[in-house]
Image 1: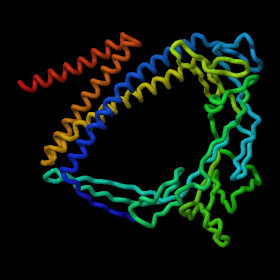
Image 2: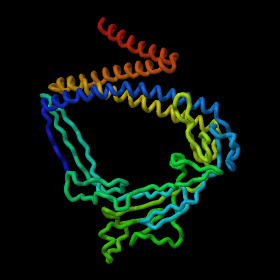
Image 3: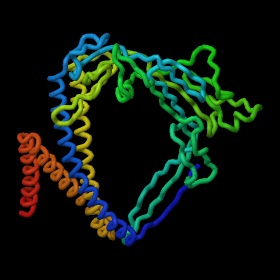
Image 4: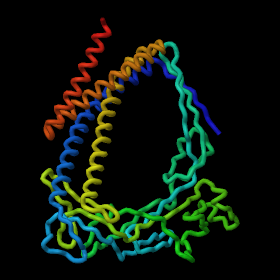
Length: 388
């Protein structure tokens, strides 16, 4: 089952669209600067906060009782995160004492996939050929089929029993109570095993391993339909699984306040509030936090550079479209403008990062400025050599 559409876009229409994209490209390019600048400041402030926190943090051997002398101090503790709260999934009739109970639902649906090829024509027009294919998949999101190119692939449009997550409101940590944010960061979820003799509140369900298979509504309402969902799934069928977070040991770094904890506010105005599953010593927790900060920093650096590159590519796009009157010439111009956009974006990113570092770490800033200057010098020298 496939549908193919072929359209031709004129050279004038392509040129008009590319010119309209110039303004948006300039916006993207401009946004890259504050993103990169903010990211460097945030990275340094977070790193300094972690250094300050590690130096101020006091290891507490036991959380069995509240030590009044630790009030207001940044402490490191390890112990059992426990709860007596009973979490219930009302739709399926599951109840368990746990820190978290999650329902994960997938529905059997039609999915449309498209594949487009483009052919440049003499004169600058482009012929686009798009092929749409359809297949049935298990998906955790409701796929909207109203805009599918081919009729006969209809989805319900909603999931009758959507995924949901429930968390205990009261989780103890020895003599302490964890706050809502800390409870939300507790992980180590495991598959929930249905108890022996479990009776589901949803009618006519079937079971396959960890899944509760729920036939679509039409099947459930037809008493004579005994279709096996596992081997004969149909659109609208659902497979539901549950995960649970049982009480277990965790490690935290936070400021002690009364019988609970709050974030430790460092001099850089960044908070230190760490939580990891399992028994993790103080140096390991801060090392993991530094690794997470470094990863976020590099991801945002890449994101800022891409904003600049994509923005400049859109600004230069009319040049390649103009040259597309002769397709091979348009390809050459497109490669050239792409290279120029990449170089300019890289130089601008390095300079922005360097300027940011001037405010926070001048030595590294100078190194980055030297690197950016060397890149510009190399490009100029290369061009000068090519002219000789």
